[in-house]
Image 1 (cartoon, helix red, strand yellow):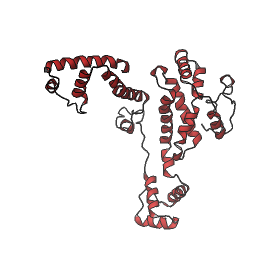
Image 2 (cartoon, helix red, strand yellow):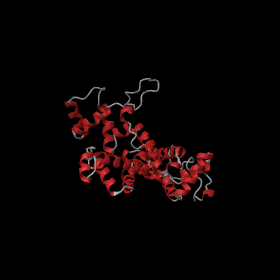
Image 3 (cartoon, one colour):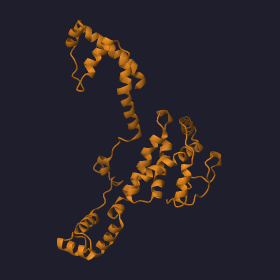
Image 4 (cartoon, one colour):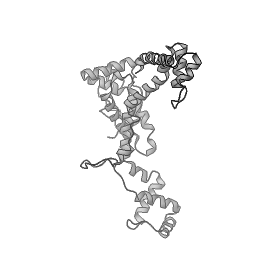
Length: 299
């Protein structure tokens, strides 16, 4: 859907109740961008309240407020993909679809802001749109390339690869470098490959999507990674702080001295503190148990 006129799905005709400051047809893309940049942003408390209403009561009014308050995020992300040669309005429209999907799936109890969660879904929709249009855009992106593209198609006989003589002759005829002719012919000779296997194909494990996909930026994975990082830094330091000096020295020497886990032996520490190796083991066991209790709040 083109945003030459404001998308009605994103901008309801009556927003006075929300205090949004605009209504009806926005006229063009610039007016749309200007309008969404004036929309009020939500505080964390307002966001959680709205998301809870949507989740518990299927409150569509709450969903609308969540979507409208994040339209500026879609516009901002879309600007980063203008280099693909696709219309800004179309990128925004695809991003808006991703935003609505994010709002529908957002869980306020996860402790993450909607802006962070929604970025994944917004980018995913834009990526899908770009991939669907990639070949049309990539074949000819500049005015000179488009001119060469159409001229090459009209001069090229059949589907066979051009010989060096034909390339030289065509470059001379079109007054371009032979390297440019070779590059454009390569683009024209390339074929599209579907990322996903056909829906009627039972064995889709060899489709590109199976080995090109990555879940590193998937929201739940990001949250898990953040929790692990917090556990390793803040949580570990807090747990060590609960120990007495001797217990901390033993744990650090045994488990934190080297990254490969080759810490000090029980006998080495026994000699250092003038006690038996068994006593060092008992102190270590008690210290690790105490640390485990301190780490519970970070798990």
